[in-house]
Amino acid sequence: MFGYIGTIESELKVREAASYKSWYCGLCKCMKRNYGLFSPLFLQYDCAFLALLFSGELGEAVDAKRCHCLHRCHDPRRKYRLETPALRFAAAVNVLLAYYKCLDDWRDEHDAAKGAAALLLKGAVRRAGRDYPALQLRTEQFYRDQMTMEQDDGRPDAAADPTGKYLASLADMLPFPEAEKAPLQWLLYNLGRWIYLMDAWDDREKDGQKGAFNPYLKAGASAEDAAFGLYASLEEAHKAFDLLSPSRDRGLMENVLTLGCPERTRQVLERS
Image (cartoon, rainbow, N blue to C red; front, top):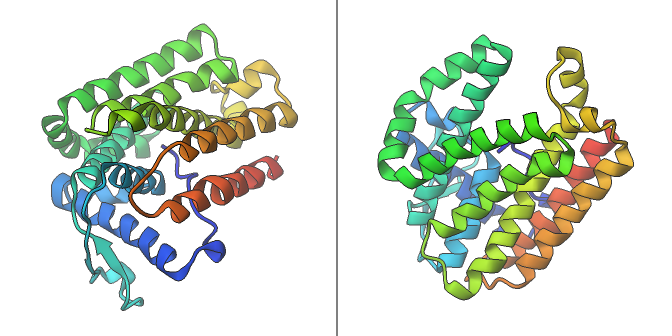
């Protein structure tokens, strides 16, 4: 996950903005409690959205408490979500993805900072693996699949496929209602594709300078090609979301999918 998912806060209702922040703070607290003091350094809004989505789909009863974190002491109204199964699962996803991404970057680029980050996360990964052994195995397999796909094919659509399949597979790891599972998998698949393609387009200049793999550079793709793939993935994700019936925060998730993600797509494409 790369931190591209977000809202357009000016378009949110006050309670929706407060709810989104509480999920982010709840994920931070959950990671610190279960996976150590260093783990929140790698916290991503992408995984806060997963917690929000999964909790709504499970129909969990959730509560919030005042957040006394020094980082947020300027906001006396700030709250954080109390731990739920969905939040705990999203915290494990965040930790595992952060670790394997740092490890992958260390192997590819010998980046000392990424190697140190992977070492910091080792204890957290052991605990996440004990909590969710199937998730750890699936995350390891995902990075192997990603490496193989980039070596064997490398076109943007093909290279984005492992990330989409990985996110879609998360729908099999929690007890979601059967009627919701297929659209949830399609939503997650297309969101995963979008995240991968966003990161690839955003990094292509840096990758070109380093001589690192980038699917857009390999394919000689234009900005129009990139825009088509990115917006098509978002459109499919939104179609799938329309088939879901989360128990709460639907307006907040709509804001993310129909306003926040398209706006970030526009910003990334304009930087080119």
